[in-house]
Image (cartoon, rainbow, N blue to C red):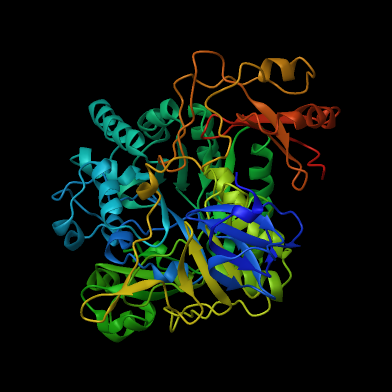
Length: 610
């Protein structure tokens, strides 16, 4: 790498306090960027840059990663993605709850909730029967955020089955497996299910395991909106864990919640259950910082109990924002009949307990995901406010966790859970996804009455080295011939597919010939797990697929001193720490599991702080 004096910085963030996404304590440091990479961290008093950002008195953190979105179509329809970048989000994970815009033909059925993100109007102009076509569209019209897409199980079902009210037949499972293999080869990171919803509720555990076999072969992750988040939540968690064990792959429980009053407080049961499972398999979870959910407007009377507010309605847009009970009473009909008349529609359900929300948010392993549903009407405020609400209300005002922990839950933890490399932490050589914010004022402004409100306190957002958002609600742009401002083309993750590794940085070419065998000979406390030689990184090519050689895959053991976790990694850089880490593990009772990249992750039941 060039000497300090030779650095020709594109952007210099000066005078800020760095929180790097690892839970390490904050430090005062300047950050230098060249093109899309972080190249300098430290005292940059003697350095200059094409653009200097004054971050005095502000926090500089990794760009936030939204672990749960429904932005599949919004990325193409609304590339500036102001709802996300205005709260510091620089990366989104799409294809959740079993629904994705691809692979889906133009004439395939679109039952709710699939139609919420893949409407006929959208697909008439852009049909993606192959996942590669969807990724190509993202490259042609890149959004202002990075994209890590998944495939929806419901999308596969509607594309292969003539009836959705039954379990898939053997030939339909084979067809779904073939449809899933293509996205995994193209760059999808995994598959999601939404067995809570009618189009997939008839799918059995066996069907899901069989359909997901390509995930095990290709190194994907399984993410689920579980079958039940209310009375049978425990059984649904057990099913999720069973699926992960059967396939030998990581699982993520989406927007963990306990719905309906009779289940309030049951997070005291579910969180220990999840934590116990983490000792034996890779399990993740996320949640949003609100006590109300939002999804399709159900027509089943049992799912319409409590306060239900209409968020969108194709047939009666004038009633958006009103409560279903009021609408039904004014029409003199039942709740289910009123729901039928409002279709197609989405709604907000006030059915959760704030104590459960806080307990799940505070749980060490919980990521932050907005579950926002893009809408031009009155969406749930989580679409615009999730991340700033965590920072302002739950971190600063309620002191639920330190700021370092809050940021880790939005960045490093999410990157680790989904196997996203070179994002989620601020390190030399990582992509320059950064957010500058005022810890004293950051707060969500989005409300149920007025949800499309940018947050306060977010000063600057940088995606892949480009300033995409600045305080005042503007994003980087250029004027066209008419004088109108158009957003710059900030590449999605797919758009960086052909960029080489950072110049001058030592990047491993492949697995080393030493490692796991040698390290294991030093201690019996870790049980060996051998990844398939065909396994590859599920990430899009921007992050780079892991190289494999003909020899045994090598792993090195690294301990994170701040969360007590251990992980095996396939790089030479930190091997020197392995012996020390192994010795530190002696005497503990370890667990071991493999992440989506074939990387071994281990931990100790004591969860001892380093």
